[in-house]
Image (cartoon, rainbow, N blue to C red; front, side, top):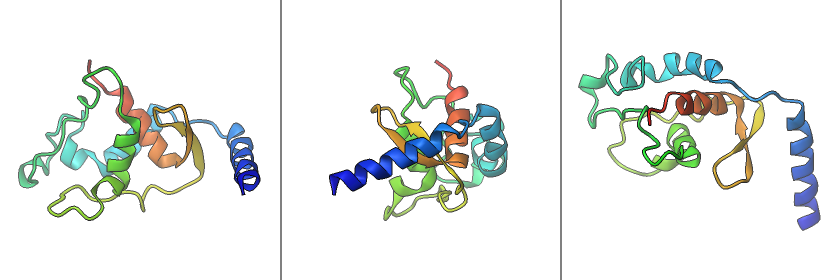
Length: 132
C-alpha cells in the first residue's frame, strides 16, 4: 500500500513539474469576481454587500498579524471545508467553483498539497495583499 501511495505522489509531482504556479494577478481576477462584493476592492471588508452581511466580512489584508500567512486555514475557509456543518455562516462555499488542474501548494507545513489552480491563484493574491 505504501508503495502505491509513493508511486501516486511521484506521478503527481512529475505532472506538477511542468505546471506553472499561479501569480497574484491571476488570483486578482478571481477575487474581483467572487470576493470583492463583500470584502471590498482592496480586501478591507467594505464591499458593496458588506452592510447587509452579518457578521461583517473580514479584512483580508490582516490575515497574517504574526507575519506568517495561514495558507491552510485560508484555503479551508475559501473552499468551505472550514465551515462544514456550522450554522449561521454567511460566506458561500467556493470550492465547487474553483476547480481546475492541480498545482502543488505548500500549506505551511512543508508538505506539497494538490490544490486546484484557481484556488491556489486566489491564495497567492490574498497573500500578496497582506499588510504587516
